[in-house]
Image (cartoon, rainbow, N blue to C red; front, side):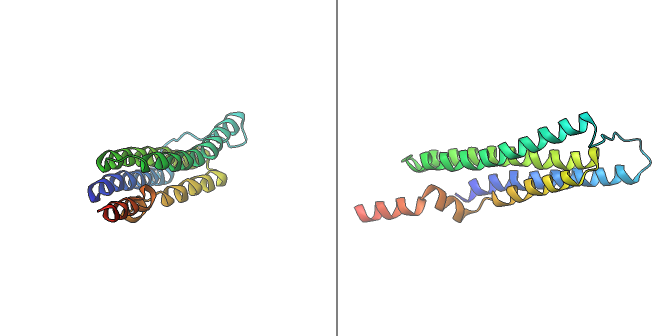
Length: 156
């Protein structure tokens, strides 16, 4: 169980680390004399890009959280604990990547569009990613592993 959480945490911290690295690169690009692309947020291209990004956030975050919750209900029914944990790990990583992609894209769009609304959107993605932080207690509760052990001991 600890190994599963470590693997999921690896992805979790990798996403945040990637976000920080992208932000640092953007910081240096912004304050260097490098010619950089800039998209006016009020131009047609800017409106389309920001609309697509906001739509992605509005769909992906609730969908990732809802589908993961729905899948945990199915995984609770699996008798083999190893299979249950493997499915949980796979589902957790997918959920993290869906939300993390929105965060990284938001940081890039903050740089490209220089828009305050993109900062807030990236912050929403960061908060959503924070709420998906994996812990052993969360995994036990979501998979109802403690209840399964209680049922087994009461049967004996």
